[in-house]
Figure (cartoon, rainbow, N blue to C red):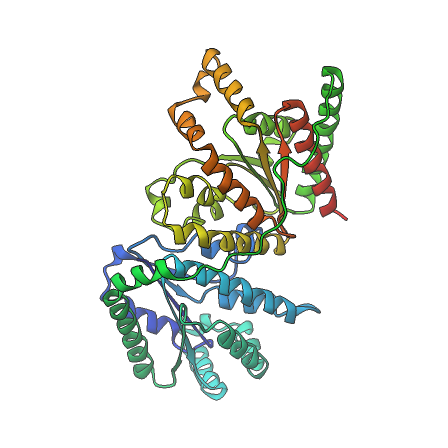
Length: 453
């Protein structure tokens, strides 16, 4: 199991002191401390929770956050005309983030060190008068102090609406520093001892828990008649679409809009060929193609979504996933690589992740490349007979084909449960490669142009 400890509080409430006391008897090889300040340019070009997702600890490790996603949400969302709606969105996203980590076995403990406005004034003044600590007190510190009464109800809202059994808040009265340290220490110890003693029963009960699935949508895998193109017609449209995509790529960069494109589909459905045509005239410095295979050791020790968050594009860039997080509900489900409750839980987790990403201003296009079983067999045999394509076919492809019916059921459920208004699936009928490539390109064009309206 992994552990996250969040230490929040008013300025000058003793966050550093509490952390110093907490870590002095911990093996430094087993924990990481993250002191959260203003985001870097790289972090500003990402969704709010991106830098926290990639800092989540591997199994067996502890991550301690000196301030966290709460302080950043407070600093970044309490502005503008619709700041109340922004706060609501942040709270919803944070709840999903913490619940997903908890469901994966992470212990989350959150502390808020509370002091009165008068006590804060005394401590800020004392630090300002001390030559050794005066550098710590800035105009911003005093501005925040002067708005203490305005921020208090917002902090209370965050605390109340994000206080859950899976990620509880502990409010620590921090006027007495010794009391605050003891409260943090004792709460951490009790929580860890309780979790360790209940590991076996928790695992058994976890598998029995009912998984709330998102509603099904009517998505058909073979929904469009495939147009027939002559070679001349195909090549003409291909060049036209690639030129338009080159221009769209430039606009995405200029307007700082990140775009994720997901390619899923049957083996030999043409994902590689579609991706090659898609990026042919794009600026290679502005896109990244990520082929997804089995997770490595580091990735397997994190939440399964972690390795995808680490590869999400910054503002203005495009990331193309050749297979994706949907492996959780496809290959991992069919091949028994995860527990049933884990892949059932994944539908909702994926929808939450995608909705949060789109809500933060990102674009997301998802393609399912559909071919018939007979067409797949023809392509497999062609690959085996062609020395230049034999590397594309292996024993695992043939084994997967033997489980066609199981995969078909998994695909149908995936499409039905994860095609949402924020991130709908586009089924690409791919028995005809020319039709599939043009439909893919046209979909990217139509979707991206819609982002600019």
